[in-house]
Image (cartoon, rainbow, N blue to C red):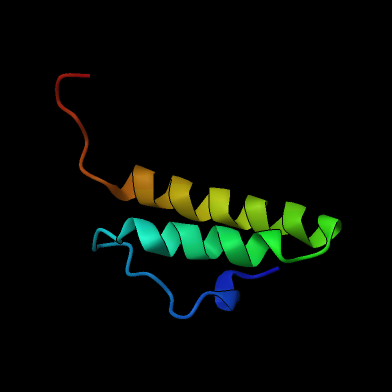
Length: 60
């Protein structure tokens, strides 16, 4: 399942409201079980990309 099921693709440079995540989860939950696994994997990859592209913490 691609993340195209969400109304619009989020801009990784802009913080997104919590509702975007909740609506993506709702779309995933409506899918059959095997497609849900793919949807969660795609969501994980997207969130990991956002996290890695964020500002680095100099104190870490």
